[in-house]
Amino acid sequence: MPSYRTIAQAVSTEIEPIKKSRFTADASPIQSQAQARDFIASVRKKYPDAGHHCYAWRLQAGDTGWRVSDDGEPGGTAGMPILARIDGQDLCSLVVVVARWFGGTKLGKGGLIRAYGGAAAAALAVAEIIEVRQTIAATISIEYPDHGVVEGIMRSMEITPIHAEYGTGITIQAHVPVEELDLLGDRLRDATSGRATVEKSDR
Image (cartoon, rainbow, N blue to C red; front, top):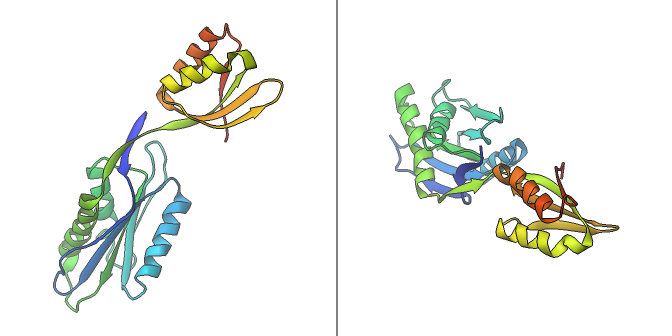
């Protein structure tokens, strides 16, 4: 997946009360399950008096990391409707938490599904949707005389170095768009007569 859609930053909104039950929805971009859990914990802390904190998250495509929680609501009435709204807009790297304060009147399964899904949709409606290029960490090894030409190629491909080490040669760490890793390697090898190398990195 060369790119994916997510939201630009965390958002929070509240929908109109439904039979006196209040619903708020908080959403945030995430890059890991740990970030998702941290955000959920922060929403619980933000609304400690809410009776339910239901959520769904989905990481990037190809990652099995997705979760839903009904947090005490009848099974399938909260987490899955929230996830359905995330998937309905083809979004990922995203967590949505919907908090509910019970208003004294039961909403029934259908009512809960509409309420939780509607609250999630309201949060995504106020969020800025962005497209993010999926990148991979790469180590670029070059010789000193090739530094200028390599820098020019990286700049032309909008690849920004994040770290460089200077020893007998130069080792550059960068995040490279997945679909351009092979192209970068080819261009650098051609421009340096094979002296430059590009390898995937764990950094």
